[in-house]
Image 1 (cartoon, one colour):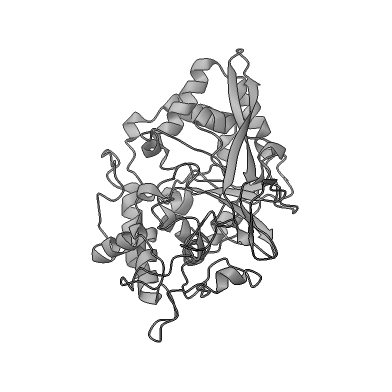
Image 2: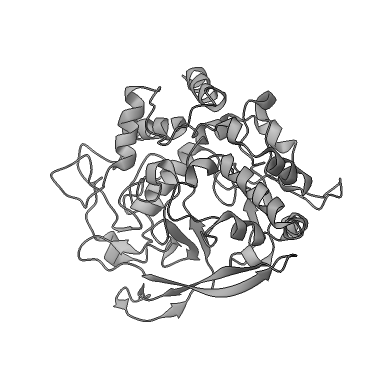
Length: 401
């Protein structure tokens, strides 16, 4: 099975590069399991108990009712729906859930606002960047009763839903190839000191594999229990009695998980097999590619894995991205983020609304580059000093990947 999966993934990655693929779901070489997994990915979960026994178990607290709600056609979602706020609260749990089943108040409604920052380029072009701010407008108190109030969130880590193209390919890259790219002490003095996290997935490289990634998303985002995360109450804590008293979809004698092993395996098969949008290499801006390499972007956004067969434009390592992109968690990872893969940007350009970076604050690639700092500061400064035409060449290259 693993060998068969790898052959399918590899053929999608390196074959038929002259054919444009607008919809990643249009080709299903993986067969019936793929289509069944896609149906689970798009399925709308409902509150238990219900007549649709295979679809109940939502919540009690949740952020979305389906995987596709945050990953439209396996790509990125839109703000605010595809944004979650990770926290660290004994009472509220690991994540703010902004929705709840009938009769139960949500933990909070998050108000998102922005402060404008003007970034001036070397040719005097001014770019307006937007710094996000988060305010809770409805929150549960420690008494267990809902209280309406407005409060700033002091410690949080915003997480925007990433595109899922080629996730199965990232999973099969040998670990040693990733570890060989580490340089935590910056021994080569290039200003880049990437280091491996506990895993290769998640914005903090803290998720080991796609089983864990999928199970955690089902639990935290939808409130669905699985083998890895068997709590049918999702992110409800022991202090949230009002949440733990609600019915769930795992309370029947014949069902102790809301998505059982067969269903979970089928969903996982689909996620592992989501193909990359096929890139037309003839449309790639070669001048922009040279600029990308010359100013140092490739130090983190790397290609050439498995003897050049896999080119995701990421090293999957953690890098210090500076204060401007830091979350407000009081830990050593506050400023560090895993390098996101850039492959698939070509299909994303077709979206009317675009969101980049870990919290979706950038609405185009120009803004995303200008938010870079820390280990990427030198590359950003080099980008700012480029001529207008050279900057556009670089962006055109990114849009062709």
